[in-house]
Length: 55
Ligand SMILES: [Zn+2]
Figure 1 (cartoon, rainbow, N blue to C red):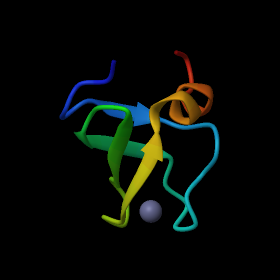
Figure 2: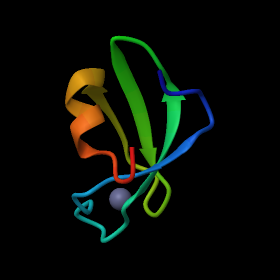
Figure 3: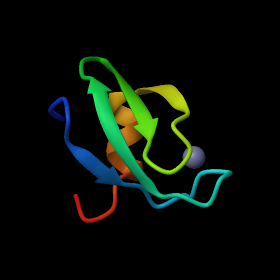
């Protein structure tokens, strides 16, 4: 389970070039905010698990 406020590094870079995301809300779906451009997205946790670098 990811914690609110935790910063994750994803394998795939965002369109803005950033690859670090802050957890805004955790649950079955996780809300992430791009630390570079501030864009918010919602992603299913099981999908996110495969995207996170270094576990
Ligand atoms: Zn971004």
